[in-house]
Picture 1 (cartoon, rainbow, N blue to C red):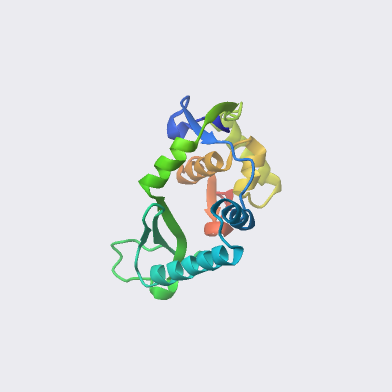
Picture 2 (cartoon, helix red, strand yellow):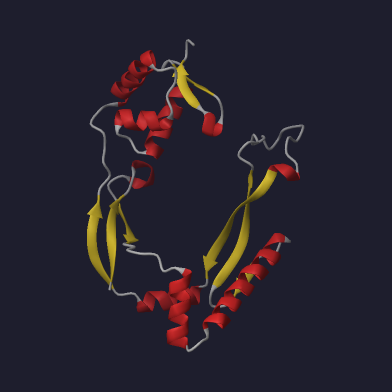
Length: 206
């Protein structure tokens, strides 16, 4: 029997509404999976390992040359590309391209499950209700949090997102959005310095 947890949506997703996640209690490791296949399917451990290693190797090869790979009953794999973290993302209509092949990398491998696999899992899953998870909302107003940030910057040269989270009790997404709004508001007295993971927030007069 599996449990589902009822979560409260954020303001961005639809404040006051609920979504559901499966409660995950452990990770079934490769060793566990191989042992399960050996005991339940009557397969030799060496054969299971060889098949898994072969699938991994061939997936990597096919994906690396531009193919998507569909394994019927299992799902489809495809590459997701991104700009390397130390490279600036260029404007689409820029007259001069700043990017070349060395600036692009494989950010992730995306997987979409086959409908038959989803159906099989759904038929075998027996759910019961678990707990609830509510969003912890700060009691301060936006203006009060901006004042907290200015007070912090009186004694510190800069503030990271994590610093603002600690000050205000906001989660990372909410803190990042609010800091971005401060930066874009010329009356807030807040600006940024640096880029990407090195970005910090400082007083605008500095």
